[in-house]
Amino acid sequence: MRVRVWRVVGVAAGVLAALVVVAVVAVAVLAVPVSGGSMAPTYLDGDRLLPAPFLGPDDVERGDVVETRFTANGPLVIKRVIATEGDRVRIDPGPVVRVLPAGETEWRVVPTAADWGAKPVACCGPDGMATTAAEALVPNGKLFLLGDNPGGSDDSRTWGWADRDLVRAVVWTRVWPLAR
Image (cartoon, rainbow, N blue to C red; front, side):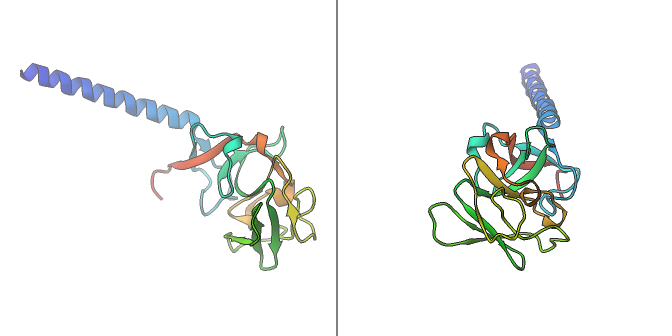
């Protein structure tokens, strides 16, 4: 009887060890590295983020953090979705980012970091880039993206609208470091 119990314990330990190895390898291969400080304080340089399984460009919603490109050949960036197609977006003095979601009548204030540094805060031209225009309508298939640290972020104010189709992943969670 003792041999059988130890055999079951050994098999269970082996299965558990295999699952741990698979999880570590999956995180190492699938996790997206954060480079730079544009998403601070939410995500810091060196953090590793795990994409949400089974979510793609069609699943992106306002408030999501995504890994994407602003142009087909541009660098991969991690930014927050502030507005989606049909929304209106504006940045008021202060600066205060506001979004008027499609179909709604009341502007929502988007919480952002206080330090905007020297980055442009006026927004948005027809292309989504910083300008003196008061507000803009996000076109079909496009997104307006900001870094959580606007003073240290090149985002839609610099690059304009982001194509929804270029979204590579929706961020699910930070997996490294384990604690902060």
